[in-house]
Image (tube, rainbow, N blue to C red; front, side, top):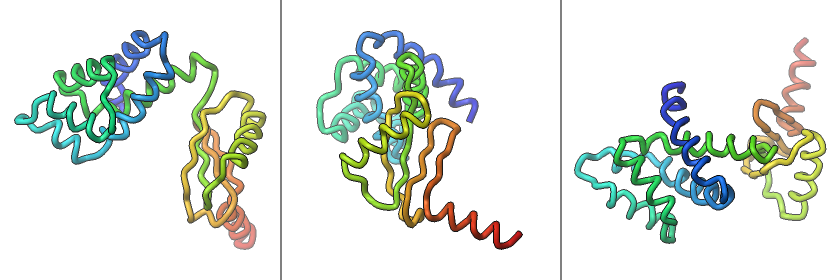
Length: 176
């Protein structure tokens, strides 16, 4: 949605400039808060004219399980007062892109049919960094439909070594 991206851009850029000294700390709280803000029930509550920004911040802090840093409270208050709370997940995505560009890294999502232990993930992560030629911020998501293997998405690049993909390739080859 281009409109949401347009709305989010100035907020993401301002947050990036304001938190340039502590990008990792800002990224940590922003990821947590944007995940919380992505819930439709919370967005509906935030859009309710009877709910005050302080009440919404209280719900977010409660869901976060810890007190929000002052920078997070100020940023969220600005979003709530300007009616831009629904743009928070997009702001977080754009902030992450700016931080990655500054550090020369990329986000990577590894989809796996089964849980991956830390030692195996470190090996996979190192191999992926060699394969893609850059530092990767790897997250893992479980997808049982893959049957086996992994599927890696880095930006617009996809590396699919799953059993499901190989079965699809065989299906196409047999149908031809």
